[in-house]
Every structure is written in C-alpha cells, then in structure tokens.
Image (cartoon, rainbow, N blue to C red; front, top):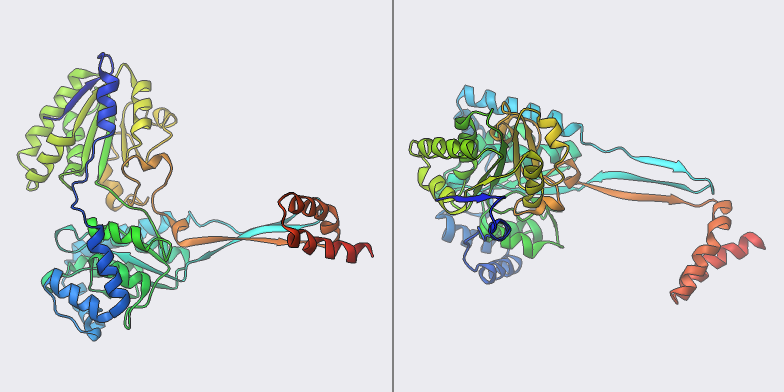
Length: 433
C-alpha cells in the first residue's frame, strides 16, 4: 500500500522525513566493474569497446561497423510510420523553438574607470549523447538532448546507443536525423561512456556527455567527470501533484501512473487539502493500474514509494513541495499561477488540469531532462546553457590601470604573492615615469 500522511498527525514530521530519505535506487555495486571497463577502453580502445559490446549486447562489431552507415540510417528511417514521423517532427519543432529563446547574449561595456569589461558565450566543440537501448529506448530523449546542443552551436554531435542483438528503435534513428546528429555509435554501457570521454582509434572524444542510462552508465559518468563535462546523474523518475477537489480524480491518477510506469523505483506523490479527494484518486489509480500493460512496474512503484499527503491548505502543500523539490510538479488547482509563485524548488511545473506532465515529455517544448532526488534545490533541467561556456573579457586602459592598479598591488601584498604585485607595479611605474 502507498504511504498515507496527514500534516495534522502527531508523527507527521517523522513520517515525512522518512519519506524524503527513502532510498529508491536498488542498483548493484557496480563502481569497481565500471572502473575496470574504463581502464580497459583507455588501454585498448576499439578492441575493448568491441569485446564489451559482444559480451553485454550480444553484438559482434568491427571498427568499420561501430557506427550506423548512411544506408542503415536511411533504411531505419524508412521503417517509421508516417503518423509517427509527423508527431516526432512536431515535437522537434516545438523543442527547437523553445530552446532558441534560451540563447544568452554576449555583453560588453566600459565602466566609470575606463575599463572595458564583458563576457561572451561559445559552444563546446563536441558533445556525446547517451541513448539507452532496448525497452528503455526513447526517441523523445534524443530530441531533448540533441536539439539544445545544436541550438547552442555544437559543431560535432554524436550518439551512443546500444543495439542489443543488433536491434534498434527506428524512431531513435529518425529523431537523431531530425535533431542534426552527425553520427550514431551502436555501443552502450560504461564502454560507450569511456570511449566518448577518452576516445579510441575510431571514436573521437567529446567535451560533454549528456543523457540517461542505467547504474553502469551513471557510475561511468561520475568517473569521467572532469575529463569531460556531464549533465547530471539522474535517478528514478518522480512526480508530485498538488490537487484540490475540483480536479478529476481519474486524470490525477493517470498523471501519477505516467511516472510510476517508468520504473519500479519511480515515485508518485499526491498532496491535497481534501482527504476524501485523496481517497478517490487512490481508488481511480488502482482501477487504472489493473488495466496497464506495465502494471507490474507501475504497481511496484506505487506500492513501495507512492504517497498521499493531506495538508491543511494549499499554502502548506506548496511548502511541503518545496521540501521535496520534485522533478515534475503538477498544480491542478483553481489558480495554478498563484500557487506556482510560492514554489521555489521544482524541476518543471505544469500549470492547471489541462497540462499533464506527459505533454512535457514529448511536445510541450521545455526540456524533459530534469533534476531528480531533490536536486532541484540546487540545479536545473537540461538547456542550451549546458552546451555553452561563458568567457569573461577585460581590457584596461592606462587610465583604468592607474585608477584601480594600486588596489590590486595592495591585495597581492596582503596575500604574499610578490610577482602578482610586481606585474602591476611595473606598469604603474611606466605610467608614472
């Protein structure tokens, strides 16, 4: 049974703290195995990638077949039904339009002392996007990762996508084409992350790696961070719905199940000021659950990690939501904008009962790669900014150096960095000579 909490109960704080602290990832200890795979790829390059791909994905490759050929890409795209291609194209258009608006502006100005200051934005040169294979192969994730990179101006964009037994989702290939991906490597796991980070004889290294994956991929991303940039270490999916009794219980139930069906470790939480409404949602959810094709996965998620929290009012609901800092937050209330103004920590907010989270997964426009496990307290979802670097600019005129140089010289002396101070002093002496 899911967890039922009431803020009016004497033990609420204890129960709520326990809910926040639940460990929802049941991954094996993989770090040692991942370290060995990364070391092997660094040492042997293509040979190691090919060997691990044969072992884990039952696929025999050669250096020449590590990537999908143009003919294979064409053939896979041709397999996509026209209706699916049209839907994917609409998603790509909307995602691109949203992310174009995220592009920051360069700036430069002259301050009162005459110094010219500013910044400029430039893209990373190459990015690698990890796309899970098999059952967890989602073309929408290709769009969400690749389109911001292309909007940012990334020159070389590649995908690493495992193809167990040689099978690949044709929608993933079409999504890559629509997003402007340059190459699709048919390798996955820690060996793919290592190849993207360090390079092999055939696979060129990149500067940034993004995209979700299993425990091995997550561990590999942790290990290569610093050699390359990464987006985040994503945990199981989660949704929090704040709803009042004017909402449709069945709609809320379906929205919660839309995340529960992702993973047995996913979490769906309802926060409501109406206990009777909460019970109606639970009844609707359990009725819908019985009909889902992924009912075993969604059922385990709901049983182990689902929760209903009854609050005194919507203000208290917002305060609890901020403590949870959910990945997805739906505000199914009469005035969602007013309630949203009280939310400070959430990966993405969906306003009103006509905005199901599933729209955000596909065609809404905002990115669906979002912070999980309460990391929305300090981080944001994937964006164009993840593929850009900000470089500061500064230029001193003689007058500006005369005005502010003595302060720099003084501070250098206070830190016992003699050469720092002398580099300024030499120029000041030239000016004053």
